[in-house]
Structure formats: C-alpha cells, structure tokens
Amino acid sequence: MSLSASARYDVDLAPTGLALVHDFLNTRAAGRPRQADLLADLGTARAWFDGAVDLWAERTGAPRPEVEPFAAGDLPRLLRMREQLTVLLRARDGEESDAAEGRALTGRVRLTLGPDGVLVAEPRGDGREWLTGALLAEVQRAQQTDTWRRLKVCRSHLCSGAFYDRSRNNSGVWHDVRVCGNAVNLRASRARRRAADPAT
Image 1 (tube, rainbow, N blue to C red):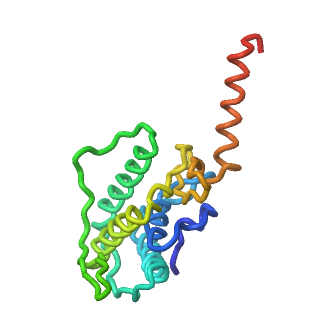
Image 2 (cartoon, rainbow, N blue to C red; image 1 turned 45 degrees about the horizontal axis):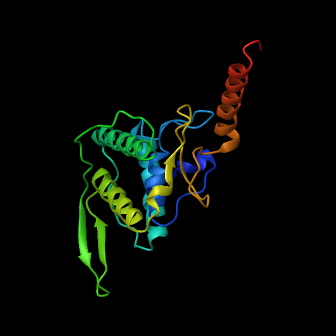
C-alpha cells in the first residue's frame, strides 16, 4: 500500500515534478490535528516511497524507475534533508530560522543533453540516493521555471504543513487559512484590541 503524505493535509500538490518535493516535505508530523511522521519507521517510509516514485513518474512523464527501497540506515539522512529543505523555505520567505550553515544538500544525478539541446538531470541510484537526486533535480527545475517560490511551509509552527501557493500575488502563508490562519488572526486581533483599550 502506498501513502500520499500531502493527501493527509487536504492540499493540492505542486505541479510537475515539484510535487515530489512537496510530498516529501509533508511526510513530517504536521497539520492540525497532528499526523504521524511517515519517515519515523521503515515500513511507512517504504510505503510512502513506493507511491512517491509513481507520483514522480506520472508528473514528469518519465518511465517509472526500478529502484530498491530504503534501508533502515537511510532514514536519519532523509530526516536531516527534510529539515534542511524546510529551514531553507522558511528562511527564503523571511522567517527567522536556525539554518544549518555550510551544509550542502547532495544527491546523484546524471546530466544528459537531449537531441533538442535541453539539459536533463536524471536521478541515479537506489532508495535514499535516488530520492535525494530526484528532489534536488526537481528543485533546480522549479527554480528555472520560477515555481520554486510558490512552494512554502505553513507559517503556523503548530502545523508546518507544506503547500503550493496558487494565489495570484504569491502571498499565501497558511497551508489552510480556515484551520491555521483563522486561529492566528483571531489571536492577533484580540491582542490589538487589548493594546488599544487596556481597560478590557
């Protein structure tokens, strides 16, 4: 059985191969109510990975690669990579974060120049190695097509779900305004009223 991480948070996935990065970020324990971390144990991690490979092939139009699943020793590195990507997205969007300085994200890719002159990055290896290569290749594609800026992490740290901002001016900050935004906006509104009228 495959697992879709983002389906748990009722969000539409990012377009094309960026959907893989989006779903990877949503493997974390996030949302309200809190969902389980899909990378916490080997069984759920492998189930998610199986669906993620299908998702990547479907969204990119590439043939589904025959890749071996994760090994238990891969999970700590995947957790670190997920955290690094989250920190990068938060920092890019102006949030203060404890960015891990000087630590590069690495993965195996093969660069191929097609007959049309377009350079294509193809992930290589198995399990974690394939996934990290695919994630980094999709981040690069998204940066080239200017869709990377639309992949965000919910500003509510109680949630931290990843979402793809489809607003015209790219101004979204909540994975779900009704769930996360309303609570924060209500608290801010009450604080402003208290500040304006200390007697209340």
